Length: 172
Image (cartoon, rainbow, N blue to C red):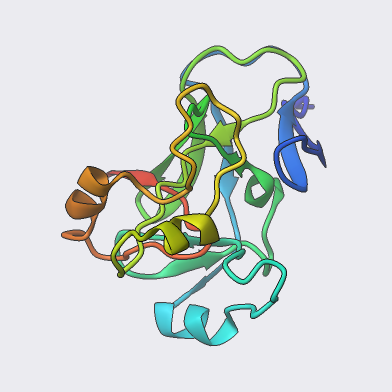
């Protein structure tokens, strides 16, 4: 029987978060980001228009242009919050997205990855506020949007990100 290494509970950063139940070693694969695989067209059709959080979704953009909607058949991975100083990263391997530890993680520590959101619009102050970051990291960017230099690199790739899409590295 395997022991769960993570648990969902209230976060001091935003809503729910995912926490380590015990020590986790750097490089460990923690969880697959699961949900329904849909097209961007369908993701935009479904996009919630909650005036309190108009840009909050559980979407994760894939390299082939599809999206994983973690709200439908999703798992605990959808509750991992953003940080500008993450302890995890998302990695796409053969169309699946896995969350890995970037460094050793202590028991009860919250898991974070850098969403690095890429939006098809100029990064204005207003847009950055719409995607405000609350991570509290010493070098917080103040936004969940990718830094402009990363945004330029990402704009060349398929599957530009929007909503709560995670940053991922592609591996085959």
